[in-house]
Image (cartoon, rainbow, N blue to C red; front, side):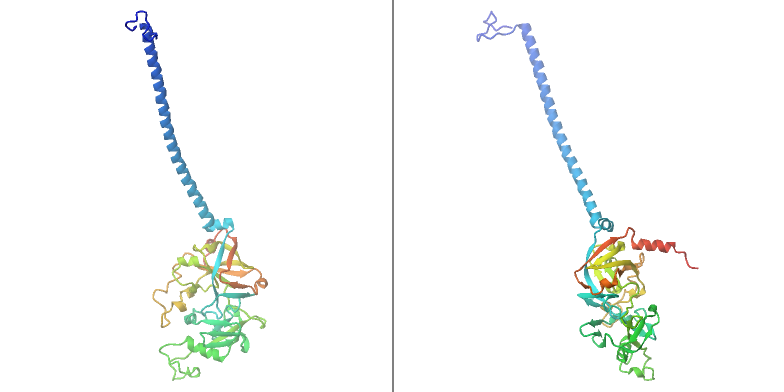
Length: 389
């Protein structure tokens, strides 16, 4: 209604006031307006809250997706760089040489080298000498004590020394060449009687034997037991002009340090020429071709292991030269599922390899990988072979 004292409907301030019907419509419109604004305000607040929720959800989604991508990348990197399959895919494989071993006398201990040269047969002076008894080459299978003797080649003086006592020339020869039984009937020459006397006594030394009894009296009644005669021989080629070698399968044997983690024994048991540093076991199962310095090498396959590997080597014997307890079953027990350890390796070109010198720290590079491991192929071949009647 109108303000009192203003019959004409005009306020003291001169502002017009709507009539009763008009005032009702004004307040109704005002409520409608205020309500709409309030609804709009509430909608804006709801939208803001929904935006905050959407942002939080989006951030959580980004975190989850990021974690999945990171894990996927980590798995890809691991598969490519830290597995044999990845190495084959990338063509990658480079391993440092951490041990060089030469075995001048077959069956005896190794000569550790900081560097050594190749010739056309493998490492120079590797397995160029042997011990013979009754015309047959003696190995650790027949005489385990061979492992306790340590030969050393002095190239400058042209001498072979065994345990610092026996000394023979690298070209010494007594008598005519002859062929030994076994080892493909290799042609050999004898290294002399002095070497035979020393070897015969050293290989049959026993606390119950009188070692002062001369060799020529060993079969008499004064001797406790007859001594066998072990003779040192040098291997020559079939023409009788150059040197030969008594390698069983291939000129070189390459072993991986990482594979020894699965075999609780000494690397000396496997008698490798080269040991390379690897972090994972049995990565060598997929190697097909190698390169060492400028020498290209062909992998002929894994090296099958026999009972000789159960013989303790020089560093595994006790003070009396006897086997320590618990060494009889290894490494054959741990290798029962594969029966192989290390690789047999040969030269692609023997003439190119001759004269190349290998040093500790050189890198052995894998230039070709196999799609199927050597062990798998060997098992399939064995299963396909019909049993013998």
